[in-house]
Image 1: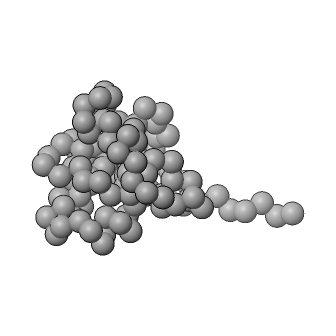
Image 2: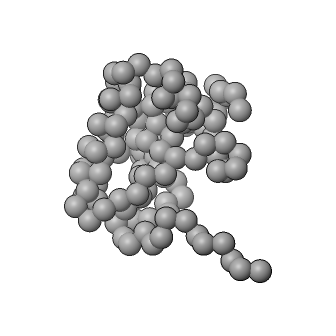
Length: 123
């Protein structure tokens, strides 16, 4: 997967598409998901052009890496899910069903989120 500068998150970053911001700093933008899967569902993206967590971890500066992690904690506290618990999810590649070729992390909270993954059905 190569970086598509016209992906939906790149367009949000350029102001071409609207979003309901939850947090923003020099390196990170976070916004409420348009199809929330939990009472709190925030999408956190770096402002740089990174395809996946693998790409981000290899190419981002130490400042960008630190800003991203700090933003997650800040958002969880701001949204009131830090005490009760929250889940972070980042999909990487086709097998994980990554839909947008811009690294992003989903932060879910506000209810019991159940087990981490669905267990396979027996045949």
